[in-house]
Every structure is written in C-alpha cells, then in structure tokens.
Amino acid sequence: MNHICENVHNCEKHEGVEADAVDILVIGGGVNGLAIAREAQVRGWSSAVVDAEDFGAGTSGASSRMVHGGIRYLENLEFHLVRESLKERERLLYTAPHLVKPFALLIPFYRHNKRHALTLRLGMILYDLLSFDKSTPLHKEFSKKQVEQAYPGLERKDLSGAALYYDAQAANTERLCIEQAIDIFGLGGSVHNHCRVTSLHSTETGVEITLRDTLSGRMITQHAGVVVNAAGPWVDLVLGLSPAVSPRLIGGTKGSHFTVGPFPGAPETGVHFEAASDGRAILILPLPGGNLLVGATDLFFDGDPGAAVMSDAEITYLINEVNQLIPEAHLTTADVLHSVSGVRPLPYTPKARSAAQVSRSHHLVPHPTAKNLFSITGGKLTTHRALGEMVISQLEKLARRPKAQNLIASPRTLVRRATSTRRLKLPGARCVDWPEFERLFLSSTSLPVSTARRLLGLYGVRATKVENLAKSNDEWARPLPGNPDSVSAEVIFAIRDEFALTLTDIVARRLLLSWNNDAGLDSITHVAELASAEFGWSDERTEHELNDYRTWIQLRRPAAYENLFTDPTA
Image 1 (cartoon, rainbow, N blue to C red):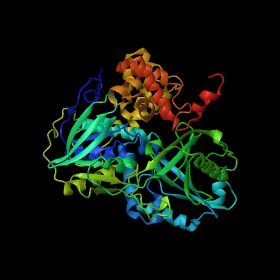
Image 2: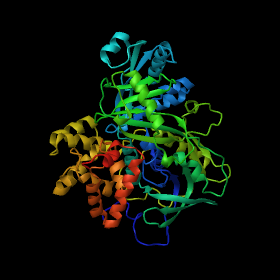
Image 3: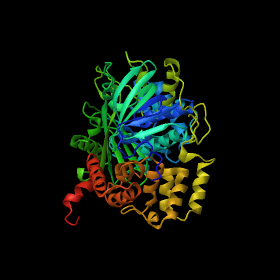
C-alpha cells in the first residue's frame, strides 16, 4: 500500500509505540487546529496534529461555507474583529483562489427590520472603509425599483431599497482543512486523523500525551513541549483528560443549515436578510452546483457536539422565513435535500441573554495549573490563519520551547520556509498565476470540461495528479455512479495523497459527495470497492465501512436516505 500515513495507521498488533517528541502537539484537526500547526511549522517549530475523527469532520465542515468580513460584528462594536476578518478574507482569496471565490450578497431594507435602513447604509459604508485594501468591489445601493427589477422574487411590501456587497465563499470548506494537513506534512510536521487523546500529564519538560488509534486500537505515547487544545466544542472534554482541574471554557451554540434545489424566485446572488419573526440574520446562499444553502440558526447547546442534528423546529423556522421573503418559493419540509448542524466553540458566557451576544473573537487560554497546556476558545472559518499566527506568537512569549528532536530535518519539506503563513499559498494554489493555470488546464485536458472544472474546484493545481491517475488505469478513469463529473481516480488520490482512511473520509471530506442530492449514496458501494482494493480490506471491513457511512449521513437527514425506504423501486 502506497499511503503517506501508513507508518502511523496500520493493523499490525502492537502493545504500544513511542512517537517522536515534538515542540507542539495540537489536539483538533479542524480548520483552526490545522492553522496553528501550519504556522508552527513555518516558523520552525516541530508539530503534530491529532484528531479523534478526521480533518474537518466537526464544526469546520458544518459552516455556512462563507469567508466573510464579519459585517454582523459591527453591531457589537467588534471593529478589530471585522478588520481582522476582512484582511484574512483578502489573504484567502490570494492563497486559496481555487477554493475561495468572491461572492455577492444583497441586504434588502424592509420597514419591519429591527435595524433601520439608514443604520444598514452606514454599516455598509463603514464596512467598505474597514476593507480599504480589498480586491472585491465596493458596495452598491439599490432603490426599491432597482431591487424589484434585479430580484423580482423578493417580497415587495414594505421594501424600501437594498445594498449589494461582496464577501467570499468557500463552497468546499472541508478542502481548506485537507490542504492545510497536506501542507503541514510537506513542511515536515505530522498529521494523524482517527487518533483519540486518552490522557494528558504535565512533566518537567512539557506534556505527555497518550493516544489511541481508533482504527487499529494501537496505543501511542507522544511527548510535546507544548499542547494546544483546539478541539472546538470538545475543548472541555479534552481538558477533563488531565488530572489538573480546569474551569469551563466553552459555551457552544448550534448552527444549522439546509440545502434545497432551485425554486421560484430564488436569487442569483446570496441574500443576507433579517428574519421577520426575531430579527436574526439569515443567509440564502447559491452553491456552485445549483442548489441553495439556507441558514443558520444560533441556539445554545450543551449536548454531544458529534450528535448535533438539525431539528424539525429549526427547519420550519428557516422555511417560514424564506417563504416570507420570497412569497412564490412555497418551500416545504419535503423540499429539504440535506441538512448540516455544528456547534460553534464560543467562550462560556453565562450572562449572555442570547447566543448572538456571545463574542466570536478567538483566545488562547493557558491552563490555570497545568504547565504548557493551552486551549482555544472562539474562532471562525475566515480568521483561522490569523488565529494560528496569534497562538504561535503568544506561545513564543509564554512557553519555554524545548529543543526539537526533528526540527527542520525532514526530507518531506516541499516548500521553502517562510516567516509567516500570510502569503503562503495552499498546495492547490501553488502556481504563478491561478487564472492562467486554470485556462491552460481546461484547454489541454483530455477530460470532459465538466470533470476538469470539478477537479480544479476541489484540487486546484493538484488536479493534474488526479488526471494522471485516471490516465494510468481505465477503471480509474470511469466516473463514479450517480456522479458523471467525477472520476474514480479521485478515490485512489484521496487514499494515497490526502490521508483518507475510511469510506466516510473519502466520500464526505475528500470528494464531498455527501453534499450531492443523492447524499453520496449512489456511489458508496463503488467507492468502497475501490478503497477495499487499495487498502486490502476484508469483506467484513468493507461492509462495516458502508454501514458507518450510512449511520453518519443519517445525522444530516438527507432526503435521499429517506427515499431508500419509501421508494418501492429502490
């Protein structure tokens, strides 16, 4: 098996193994945890990332897919967070242009809004001033007549005008996590998915961590000079693995979205509107494939973050608000194709009267008694890189960094060390001119144009590697069932080059088939066959992987799954 992670994950029986010591171990392979380790590697620290599930499997994969400047934070006077978000949005447009695209949103002005049209207009001006160095256009104001002409589906009653502004969209958000993991590995770091922390103990030289490989059952001991707990909504659970008592840090809120197909009156751009019932901000976001993402809710949540599911009440709430905004939509629960729910790792704020009042700022919190153990509260998709930079800058002042055992010595280093990640492109964007690469790839590829565009959107310049795999094997050149724009080579690529270890890893977070109307169910048997041949799975293991995916996808309540049991022809 030619797998870049095979030295960590294998099925041989070992009582335990001692991993190489590192300067910093990051617990949590979401977008924030990966950003910390990536920044650490770039600055010369040796790092490792561990995640109990998979990279991007938690909150990162349940976001609105928006890389936004935080216009809503203006209301809480968090100008520093807005400015930081706007700078990071611009950086991502440069460092990940294949994954992050400019995205227009309309804010309609209605008389029933809690925020007066004048307030919204002033907010737009301030937003432009705070993003003075952006590459996206300035906002535009529309009269009522102009809105009615450009957005004929919107409710006209009490409409007084609108503003159109630009943020950015990362439709394939999970890929931001995967590419950071690839980069960390390329820079000489270690990345381990499906490795669960079972204990944390402070020592004189740092922290000793015990890990369990959840696929093989093997126990791993890891020593790190510093541990950063970036487990998102699981931060307090991780802290509970240390004998040193810690106060509660996380007061998570659940955010849920659903997808629907095109409907009458659907907007061609995003729409950022105020809910008629409670004034909450709601987004209607067109996705590249033609469907629309609607959300999000914002509810205090104390349960198991891994079991968060969009409730019927949340679906009904969002449907009612969309139908009021776009009267001809006539959406019902039967129109919902797919839902996703995640828990935001916000700081515990017991005095907050509503979830919206809790700050979205990120913080590095030192453990009150355990040396060299730190935790992250807050954080969001847009500012993940800045969070990583902040953490390493603070650790350079707060933590005594031990002499690394494998510092900068790895032959895997693929890019020259920089002093920061601010201008360091992700692996899929490493070319001189992305638009030119895209043009040349489309003009020279032997793949169908729709397939080539899919590969560019998922893999960037690495699409050439997928194409070469497809050319090397006729079976790998075939599309996956139910996904005519895909190629089977993507499965092999996910396993060999992108740390995928399970069927759900491949389908949900490498190929993103779970977001399709069929929820990936049409292709999973074929994907499992390809993976079984590559990994050498037994029939029992293959069936186990299929059942695991079906169990996982149920949490997203896809209509396609329900149809398996209601369609008599299925």
